[in-house]
Amino acid sequence: MNVLGIDIGGSGIKAAIVNTITGELVTERHRISTPKPATPEAVANIVKEMVTHFDWSGIVGCCFPTIVLDGQCKHKGNLSKEWVNVRIDHLFKKTCGGLSFYVSNDADLAGLAEVSLGAGKEMNGKIFVITIGTGIGSGLFYNGTLIPNVELGRIYHKNGEIIEKHVADSARKKDNLSLEQWAKRFDLFLHHVKTLHTPKMYILGGGISKKFEKFKRFLTVDIPVKPAQFRNNAGIIGAALYAIKKNK
Ligand code: BGC
Image 1 (cartoon, rainbow, N blue to C red):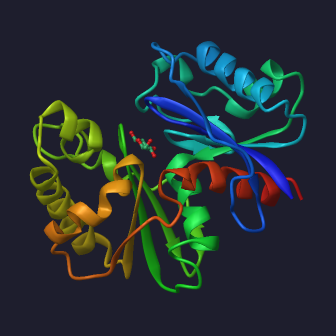
Image 2 (image 1 turned 90 degrees about the vertical axis):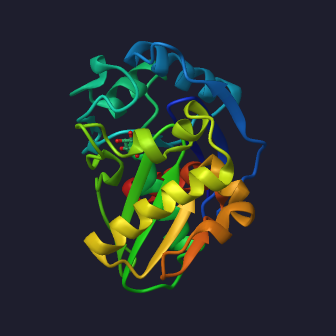
Image 3 (image 1 turned 60 degrees about the vertical axis):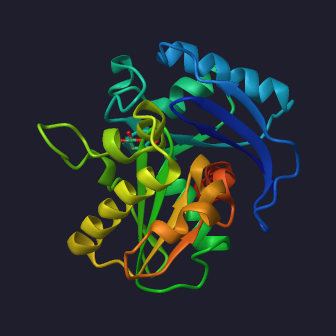
């Protein structure tokens, strides 16, 4: 079945129609920059623009870049404080003329795509899917089952600053780091998380996963680290899979 998947990120909102059996995108991906400030109204209007762009009238799966509990936003993340406690699914439904929306955390859904159809397919044990972009997202899976809303990027680093400000792709850009400098920082993070959780494998997604072949030699953590098979489209695909699952 084909479903529209939308991935709302801190810097871009991306969408495509997805074949939920194979995970393939059946259309070109469409991207619109995240509005600034990213208020509920401004983001909902972009979601509507996406629905119109794809001339879509079915169910919609949607990744959201912060903590989501039963369709409700629980943290402002890198968006805006007006989001806290908003029923995201209800807001988008209302803005988009009554379409049904299924919304969950972006890394959890990117992970769903990877564990169901991608780099973590048929893998048992504990797997962390880490997305690296404006923030650090983390999807934790045990024997293929998602344990939702694990927020590794919000671990404190120093002086109460969260670790994603130091290791996300936005930190690489902000601090003008070479890929090697950034990867060495990120590697320390992977070591730290390994000590905390003893995962069996890491899968890395987000925009920078396209450069995985260039930075993998700087990663020294001694468990398998794979790039997301769906690279930066994992969120869009996972969102579509989630909508199908929830719409039953
Ligand atoms: C949020 C996570 C999200 C990640 C990637 C972080 O700031 O706390 O929930 O998954 O950014 O968007």
